Length: 288
Image (tube, rainbow, N blue to C red; front, side, top):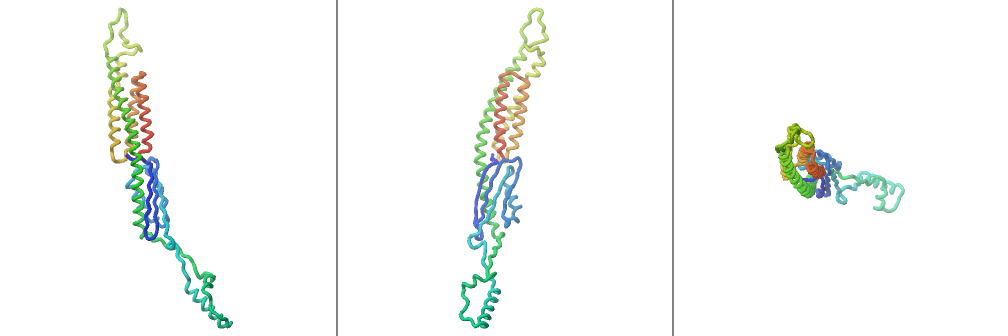
């Protein structure tokens, strides 16, 4: 069992560029991928999505990828040699024409307009691809480990609630047998003139009592659903939707039981069962 919430990050260096990947998962009914990818890696976006879908089936996944070039690699200083040649030729011409002494200082070059310019170095996306997907795979492994750790905690809490449901189902089974024995017990001999058409204090005929009070089938189904729910927690694949469905079935049986036998001890057991179901349902919202 895995939780839908978790976090993982990793980084790699490729071709002088540090690539960092941060992955965070949150609760969501379906798989919702939110990616922030540098423009240099936009061509890899669909491949990135596919890699996530292969590992995660449910939840909101927020993925942040950043890249930082090492010092001196992101930008490059370039000199316009042709323009420098023109500058020097013009200086030599001016020296001859105006009979100037000396030679131009090297420091003068920095003051010449447009002689130097800074160019952004094109990213080697293809060369960085291996580093990118290596960092992504490691971040997703850490994310999955985080989700599994929280999943174990959710599983332990659910198992505790299921043990309570098992106890409640057993108590309801005992009540079902007791109720059926009572309503099927032969009536005491009537006194002279007593009407035999009513067999219980509420004025309900015997057949009506049996039909309304027999909850054996509901209790059997309830115990079966609870046992199936306990087994689902051990499955390897995502189980959130299965758990939610089984909780609906358990709730349905509890509702039927309370409507058939509205006696205080039974109602109390049903209410406790519903409370346990609700606690599991709250946890299920966080299960993949």
